Image: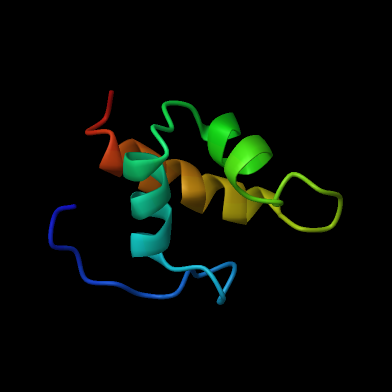
Length: 67
């Protein structure tokens, strides 16, 4: 994993940027829905917001190198 400064998510303080990057890399996530539906419980009603999903999409994209 590339050296990246860690910080809590702006929209979910108990999740960090490096935690998302770790999941993407180690769990072979290639789509955002893989993170939301399979590797976390964020798809459950009331667990996520549109701003959080946007933030996570940015982290996933950065980790995958914009693929």
